[in-house]
Length: 463
Image (tube, rainbow, N blue to C red):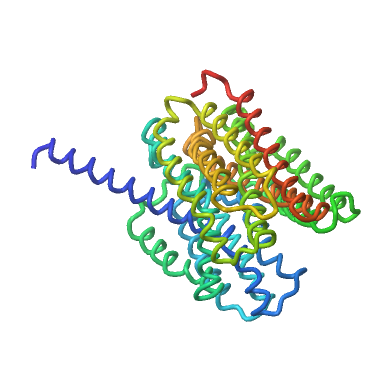
């Protein structure tokens, strides 16, 4: 064999490994995103089968996002500290076991505990998956393409979850919303152990910032819980204010600890990356808009328009297909247009789609009244998804890729919780179709706020 042939063989092997990493990371992220939304449509069935009241059943949905949002930042730093491959496999294993326990549960306590374990496993998977891409693909066009595909999968996962949840709840039953993860998770663990290259961790000698990890995790957990609590008990209630104050104290303590730590969980240099910071702020508002839109849209179709769970799930195909198609195409043009331009366009289109629904008639027709908005929101998030992932990892060193990945995924979860809590509060205070009109207007305002941050925050030269 000549040297040229050997080089070609090595290049082909590297390409194959990169494709495998992309496929594994995308599949794992799809599972994490699907389980954020897949249970929503099946909630009535869970209540009926397990005899769960309204006050308890919400925790089947809430506890997953609570643990996921609270532990993402620590999960990202653990990927840097202990190895991305190791944390990816561990997280996927925990998530798979928890999925089986969720599907097999015969009572509310077991189901809620298993969902919490799912959220913890997902908090290890998400940043490790994104960090694997960051260290596998060189920054530039190659990484942009990979992150574009990864972003398309992440952007579509929520709406795919609603579709799948509706079909499963109306078919084999809600338990298969969890069992469906088991064979995929087992296959992912086996493939990752056999084929992924071993970790090359550069900071094993450094100590993990336990004080920072404890305070930021506690603060984020309380913050997410406070948002859901406020939606049920009013934002101005004593309990809501007390929870918000406790979360603020813990997060302020985290900042104080980080400034004095020798090995901080979030180094100050990371926050000096302007593109990363603005991308994270924009991600917060983008996911705030998207997940609130999916949540309120599902309620609209079932409560106002009388759709069945299956019909509700299928109705989201319009958005899902649009997200995937637009994200796949837009990822090829981020390098030319720039992160700033993509985010501006995407958030403005999302705002247009939500504002379309502020004049929705009480007996709305799906094709005439809903489809235009579903297409616009799908297209808008198809533009945003890849740009957010690329912006969040621009200029980030390999040893900090897990941290940067954890930050953007944290903004995704906290943003989603904030959006759902916001529109839930609107519906509590305003009934009927007027309540839905106000909720969609609020989502439009959030999207416009994201567009303003992206427009003024990013430097024009920072493409």
